[in-house]
Image 1 (cartoon, rainbow, N blue to C red):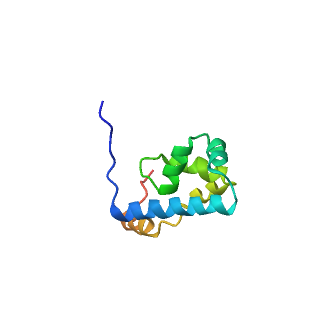
Image 2: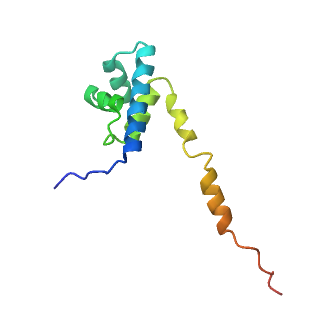
Image 3: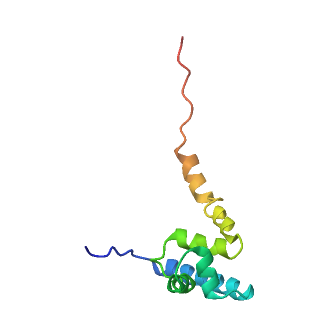
Length: 104
C-alpha cells in the first residue's frame, strides 16, 4: 500500500516551521532534554525532532502531546478558530428572515 501524502500550502508550511521552532525554544527555555520531553509525550526522540522542525506529517495529537509535556501548553489549542469573524459573517449572510408563524 502506498503512503498517503498531504499537500501543504507554502504559507502553512512556514506556520508549521515557526510553531516547531517555538516548541523547541520553549523546551530549551525550560532546560528540558529531548529524551525527557519525548518520554513525557509518549513519542520517540525522532518524532520530537520532527515536531520541532514543523514536519507536516506529524499528527496534531502528537503536537498536542508535546505541548502538554512542556507544562500544559496544549491549552492554547483551544484558541484555534475561536474568533472566526469571517465564518460568523458568512453564517449571518445565510440566515433567512423569519417567516410567519403557522395558524393553529
